[in-house]
Amino acid sequence: MIEFDHVGKRFGNVQALDHLNLQFSPGKIIGLFGPNGAGKSTAMKMIAGLNQPDSGHVLVDGQKPRQSRDKIAFLPEIDYLYGWWTLKQAADFMRSFYADWDDNKYTELLGFLNLREDMKIGKISKGQRAKCKLLLTVSRRAPYLLLDEPLSGIDILTREEIINTLIRDFREGEQTIIISTHEINDVESLVDEVFFIDQGRIVVSGSAEELRMTKGLSLVEIMKEAFRNVQQ
Image (cartoon, rainbow, N blue to C red; front, side, top):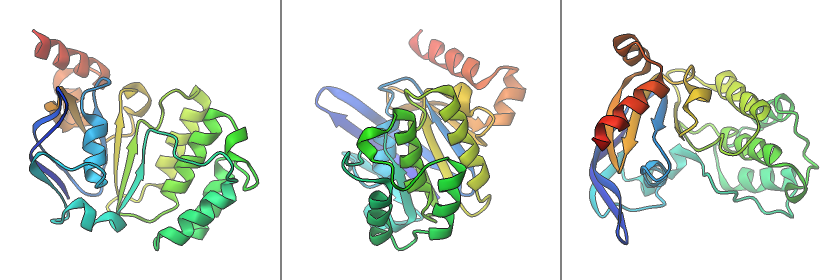
């Protein structure tokens, strides 16, 4: 389980997280939804141990994130791959760095995503780079998979391939996937639980299906309603 207990984080004059309290249940696909600047990426980086809270604490299975890095596979929004690498060189680096790297999984997903190992990172399309990043992240067998804006700025066909990969690869009960995005339409059918965040605080949370049934609205409509009420 991942827990945020009264977590605060400020960058200069910006309050990124404001006494944030939440728990991510294990074994589910979870959506962390909100507009740009809501605090989503800050929260994801805290789980990955890349940012430290100014107040409160974050725990991953009862430990601080920096003590739990071997349990977390993190796909950041930024493009971190070297342009001079081939996909094979990137995979070799990940293989040497992470003990939970799964060669069989990597090979299967390489074909499923229509990627080639000789592709040079700096010479392929943005959509192909997005698929390469996903491949390198999900080829680990980490209990927690963090995806920060995995669909941002890529075409609809690549989005479908990424979503199909997540569905195909998800091990229910064994893995927790947290997707941070403002592209809610694309992942609405994928998520089990949702947390809507705005200005560093959770404004609505719960089971995706129960929220839809109770309110009679889609998740996009629920977010619009929640944020409209916050601003009033």
